[in-house]
Amino acid sequence: MENRRRHPRIYRPVQVHYRYGQEQYSEFTMSLSMGGLYVKTPRPLEVGSIFLLNFTLPDLRHDFHIRGQVIWKKFLEDEHGPPGMGVKFMDAAEEDRRALLTYLGLSQMTRKGY
Image (tube, rainbow, N blue to C red; front, side, top):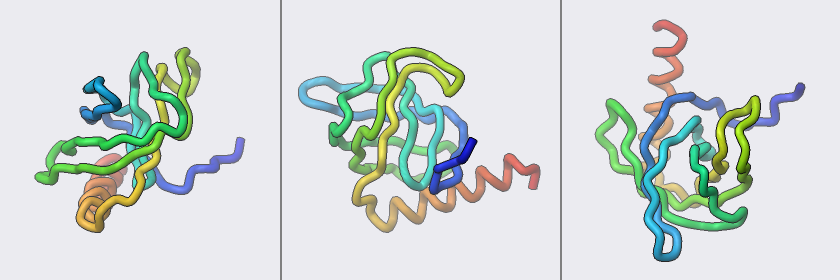
């Protein structure tokens, strides 16, 4: 099977907060990359929905405020994971991009045993 992913990802739960309409949500990620994240939720938003994500990564003192757009969703658990939605980062600030790159780099080194 061909891997179409553009960015390496880490599989670590990170709590994310977001608001859509009048509803506020607090969920956990299944994976995270430079391009976006997979939010584990039984209530995925509609594909195309745009909203502001807020999160902090473990061991990194940086508050992220990044706009995201839902690019896929699923309601049933399968071999790829639980119900949730794929969120693409949009217009991330340079400071957020640098902090995320640093965190992902450190996480990859840790996972490889460095």
